Length: 201
Image (cartoon, rainbow, N blue to C red; front, top):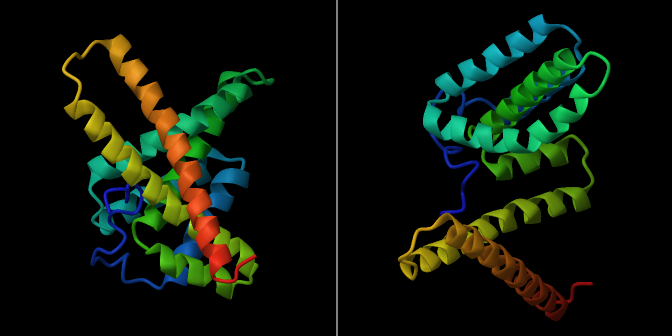
């Protein structure tokens, strides 16, 4: 599946991959807590070094990891900018950005060293409600499906486009996003109809 844009390397054979899923999930949760709640820079730097060491030991390609990390940072950066207008300015902005970066790295490391099925089993064992686990599983599954659909649409658009102006690229991108939204609605309706046909509610 070409849509495996986040956990592409989750089934490699490395010392990190061979660890128990519960231990890796617990370690990632610990990094998230430390990076999100601990006020000192020393803990943040230590957590970041742990994440980088995990990437190296897990044999995850650095190009893949950095590109996905930068993609997640695009969502974190706007929130970090809000901290810039708080008392402390640049200090709070940098602190929030580093915290978000460490947390994003920990999540990516967990996703690329532990298959999603194992993560879901850990969540069930720790007592997360079954409905929430099912929703998370469906969300992850259909993110990959939508990514596949978007990739096919982009390839089809590029194969029919010979002019490479920036204006045309923006117009085509908007068209792809609109079509992807409509196709996702149609797919959701088909899934709902199939579920009802099998006795679902």
